[in-house]
Length: 344
Image 1 (tube, one colour):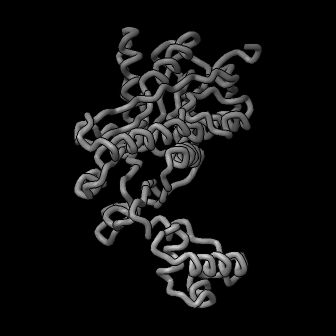
Image 2: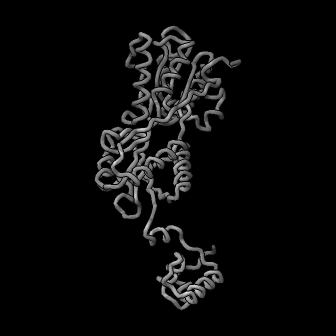
Image 3: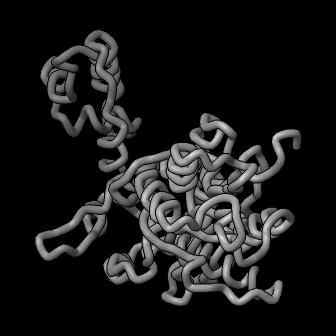
């Protein structure tokens, strides 16, 4: 395709037919005379015309288009989710149309393709527990599946991660070496669904071992290396991080970026991981294997999450009265050098 690709208008002009006739030929409509259809196909071949797949979808009676609305941020989390959703949609004969969730003049976030008439159904990633987008999606009246937040009580099918299992495994692993009072959780945004779930699971796991969680053992910020460094530096300045009685000896971070920020600040202060500080992250992102020591982390099935959401949505498309469900996908603790002895 060059700078001026051949359009359907060019084909219609060269074949001396209307654009509608070209469209009918592309869809193998029987209403076009065979001689005319043959002429149009010959022109299409001579000009090298390639139909726009989205235009074909929108002009057909059965669109089979699924909209996917994502928050406006990037990373492996969303990349793998999108990959899984797209692969599954293609295998089921659907097209996937993606957009980011925009913000209007009043600060209300809403995906641009909701209510546009372009899509038959919606996948929406909602990361905040009280996101007003929930109401927007409900009012759209489209078959919808929510990803990352359980909205089944609001009448929306949902796919979420088993944050409880992953956090509990991380707690049990670290408590093999440290006392409950020296184990801390450093989370993401306060209203983030995953952070809320992981923080609660952390507190519950310590309670099950007879340890009441001190409020200082749970800190919330954002999903960034900077926040991890900020938290660690604050603890270092207070002489609360590393070796010594009453210090932080182990940390569960709500994602790998936070964990890496803590590791960087600890190294700058000559606090060695894992000898003096043991760390576990979440996501099993590429960065977890690039840092040294390699980062223990809770792996999240993001590609399967996208695929499961598509399967659930297609089920809803075909049976709008089906029972509303929430599917929880398993997570898995990956043990590397940051949380255990180097000769593990």
